Length: 463
Image (cartoon, rainbow, N blue to C red; front, side, top):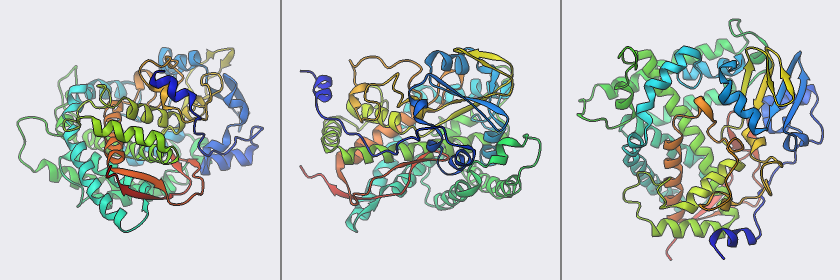
């Protein structure tokens, strides 16, 4: 019996989850879900139907889980589907006009210009920063574990931010990390949460939270300037040593012009924020699942100890850590950090059997899609074997942890390298167990976070 069959014959873990509502929530409940936990906004039918349609607040919205319709929206006719005013209004104060929220010609220019900075070779050149940050983080975790149960969620945010900082600037983040974390926490706590008026008021008009968001940006951009200027004041290396060097070397493919300083700053903000938050929550859920499934945890540990990770470049895809990579993939299926893709139709279109009118909203939720009854056997079970080499192929548009199409996440390979290496190093060194039996339920606001941050018992593996 091969490894895949052996895994599939064993009872599979079904992590704690909140059952979706039987019926689509009413207006008041739906608006609360947008603000407090988007996962409560999808009824049971959304997990079984290819496309669900709803009329609310004068708009028609579709939740799309049909692979061909997803391909139509995100690939074949993606130019017809733009970001909504609400998402731009929320993200622009902290990300500026970086790659994540730019549109049209500006996005095409940025995407083409940035592509060389995110080739596999370029990412491999950053692997040393990832490895050094993880090793230093494990030393901190030793000290925390000696004092008692550890709040891993907070630790993993610090670790992911340290990886992002070193990869961007080649320096540890002792000086700037605490202030950066305060900025991010302050924004996500209130200003980053969706508000009804963010979605209803046209983008050129002032919404209630636009003023405090503008005040945030007036403090945020000088802080970024200080970090970039301090790094730029150092002697320039002959070869790129970090992401900032790669971004500075970026040239417009048509004109040969580099990024302006403002463009550079917006890309820095986008790479640090988008990258570190999603990786932190993915690692948290992976460790939570492995704490619930000690057998899989021991398998990751054995794999990590048997692999040569002294040269970590490419470890997410070169075959050294197949089960660890499968755990990361399955974690992002069950708990996709980016739980929702929302677009507004710019012109009429057709998806499946549905006519889409100009102004209609289409929602593709990786949370719903990855647990959909049409695409996944035992969709709520934790089963890394789905992603092991030799397993049945995953439907192309049924698994979207990084999106798909022209706007697929440009940093996906970096994120996978970071997550696989960090998970292997942590589990290879420690046994991870929950110190509190209370179930941890997901909460989706900006990312798919835990409803509460549980304590973990961390002990060294001496076997």
